[in-house]
Length: 259
Ligand code: PGA
Image 1 (tube, rainbow, N blue to C red):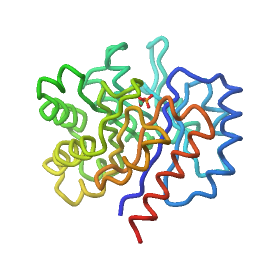
Image 2: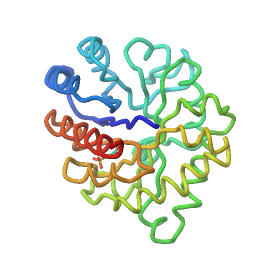
Image 3: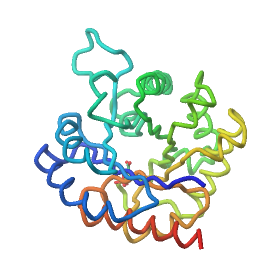
Image 4: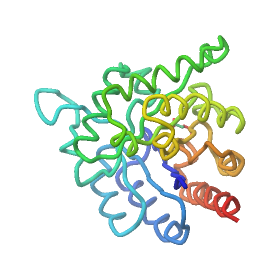
C-alpha cells in the first residue's frame, strides 16, 4: 500500500525565524502521528535552519525549485549540490513557476533528472488552467505534462518521484476540486499515463498528491478517495495547528481504510 504524503508548500512566506518557530511547534505533535509522510517546503534561505531543527524528526524538508546544473555562471540560481544536506526534497514545475518564471516542460524534465541524479526526491507538479478545464482539455494537457516531465526517466527512477496534481483554478482560490473530480483525474489521467509509460505495477506504487485549496475542513473527504495519496498544501500549511490537523486528518482516513 502507498504511504500518503502531506507536504506543505510555503511559497514566498516565512522568514528564517518564522520557519524555525513553526518547526519547533509541529515536530512534537507530528511525531505522534504515524502512517503519513510529512514535509515542509520552504524558501532557500530557511532550509539550513529548518533542516537543523527537524534533523531528529521525521518531517522532511524541501525546496521549491532548483536549477539543473551543478555550478556555473547562473546568477541567482541554486544547484542540486547546494541543496544536498539541507533538503530531502524539491518541488519541480509548480504552476506558479511555470506561469511567472518561465518554467517549461523541458526545464521541468531537466530539473527532474538533476534531482534524481543527486538523490533529492522530486515532487513534480502538473495541472490545467480554468480555460483548459472548461474547454475539456484537462486530460490531454495533464497527460502531456506528465509525459514531458518523465521523458527519458526510467521505471526504477519513476518510482521515487511524487506527482502533485494541482488544477490551477483550485490553487489559492479556496475552491478545491471536488474529491471525485480530483480522484478521477489522478486515477484516469495521471496514474493511467504513468501506467502507459512504466506499466501498472510501477504506476500503482507511485504517490500522487492532490493540491489546490486543501484545508483541515476538506482533507478527510479528499483523502477518502482511493487514488489520492496525500496533498501538496499552500495556504493551509502555514499555521502549525492547521498543518498538524491536515496530517491528523490524513492519518485518520488511512486508519479507517485499513480497518
Ligand atoms: P493552496 O496552494 O493550498 O494555497 O491552494 C497549493 C499549491 O500551490 O501547492
